[in-house]
Image 1 (cartoon, rainbow, N blue to C red):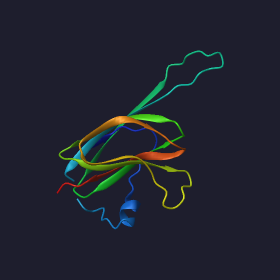
Image 2: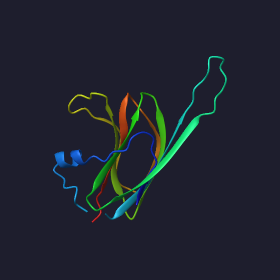
Image 3: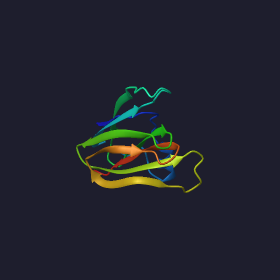
Image 4: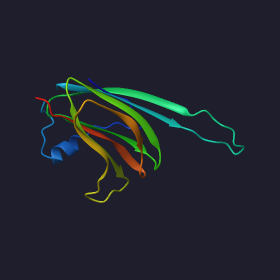
Length: 141
């Protein structure tokens, strides 16, 4: 089972799959767990320190062999999110990327890619206002 923690919206991009000619009915073998933690901090006019608000969310996604999914967060420029995902039962290919609001056709901004990975953790910092997140594909048979 793929577990994912996230802040913002979650969407599964079946449209992208169909545009790429991939049948979403293709099959589940590997599962991932992803944890995304977010925090924000604001300061008042008199410079008092305010404890950051921490939002933790987690989801599990099951991917059949050949199946893919995408999870994105709507984030303003320079916002950051801590994440931690893990695959169970095999590795996944991933593409961490972002899409700005009203992106021109063919626009791509990548944060990183990997093949047959079973885990990744770190901080995703939004390079611009828009949607930022992960695309995973289960390449196991």
